[in-house]
Image (cartoon, rainbow, N blue to C red; front, side, top):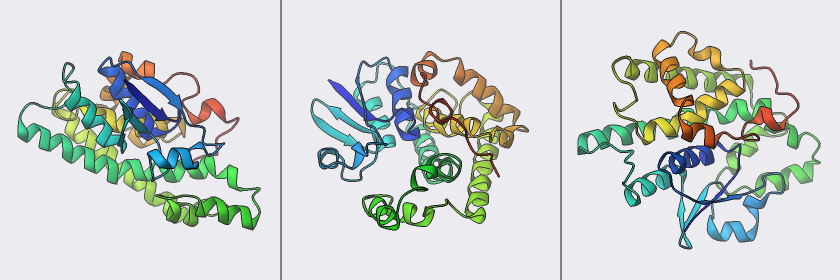
Length: 247
């Protein structure tokens, strides 16, 4: 029995849902409501002390961290393999996973909060703002820096630079390969949510001169797993009336 505790618009949740759907694995899709702060309740923190999503429950045992969950699923259910067979190929894939976690996954949070999610903090009193920040476990420093009005122009520009770096690196890798590691792998699904969020926020101009990435992106959108993952309500533009203009 697989149960995924996740949020529809969470990019980390999306990459695990992509993996589950690509492998054809049935799972209980348990939604965690951010607006109700269900990820910060004692019940959820007992499962995931970091207070983030997703969390996978497999026969009642918790598996945490989205990339760890992806690798766990691929090891446990190898019928639809999403990792290279050779050790060198797996090393290459894991290097991509680490880069994606360190660079684009982190960078996309800055425009996501600046253009959309920071609005939830605008009307909080100083005391409420402090309590909201202190309630965060893994990302308390992130929320403290964001404050009430969002991140600085310098931080936003840095995030755009990091996303552009990702685009350039992907386009180069895809010049001679259909997918990032040759065959379709976890690395491709790991970065999809960042690319989709970039488009949703109006940042798709960052890959206007990256033809190999564009070809990859079109191919990814044709996959059944992509369509199953991105149902109505999974993008910030689906649930917010307006999205701020990108800098």
